[in-house]
Length: 341
Ligand code: KG4
Ligand code: ZN
Image (cartoon, rainbow, N blue to C red; front, side, top):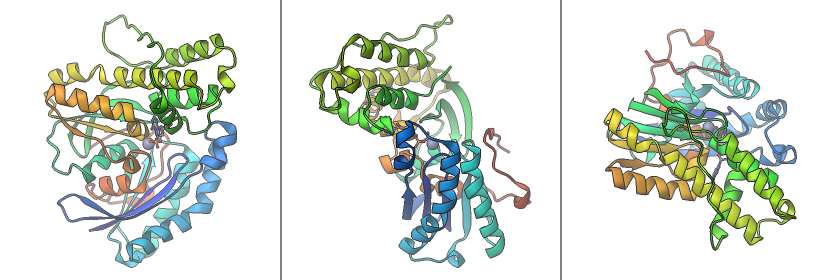
């Protein structure tokens, strides 16, 4: 089966052609149009600009993926598109366009939950993953730990009480005037550090659990920057900036890994999946490897190009879903819940 996967839930517009004959997905082609330059001057995604840009880019992104794969729409067996959650304008542009395309060409069409897509990014490198699996899905909008019973069923175990982990990276880069998006920049900066700065104090919760909260971390970073004259404009080459970035990412990675052991014991999970944009982070990848080895879990972290939002993960998930009987009544949903039949 050849699946065309489309993802435009936020600021990237991506299409991929994936072959799946039941042994796991194989990527034939992927295109992605980043909007980093468009949103960079604002230090964050401007929803209206993102939606408009998707409308302009979508045709070229799809045509590019089909051409790279050497197929036409007539050769596509299924179209899979992100249905939600995400920015409503961004979602609607591609969801509606793909619905029209599928209707005109008579191609079966499925809407995919964005987080199911992030989980299924791991299927490219680990199609035989042992289940149940703990799935840490961590991005600019999500910091969620799920129990996956298989590739299409997720049950929420824990999520951040406030900010997402990706925001800690993006906002730190913004406070240090390092550029946008912050995650990759902070990561590069941290890897140049000869030492880490002082660690950050983890939040404490009344129930004593290893829950997640990242808004206090943002404030702690701000206070450190304010305490060092000139730090906010010192730039990525400054050893103090590098040390701060390293402390930040060591802290985020350690906090994210903290609840894994208890949830492994509670659920009997056999694997750990880490996916979403923040899963590109070098320190998180290293700490996840150590954690998985220590706990005897099979680890699956997608290659970085499959971790950030991309069409391939949507195709990978879409290949496993049953196309709905009445697809034309479906609509994009900015707050789409995870509901499984
Ligand atoms: O999954 P994604 O592409 O989009 C959302 O669904 O949000 O994730 C984007 C997030 C941003 O916050 C970005 O800064 C972060 O992933 N990110 C990283 C790295 N690469 C991307 N965070 C830390 N280290 C990285 N190397
Ligand atoms: Zn995402």
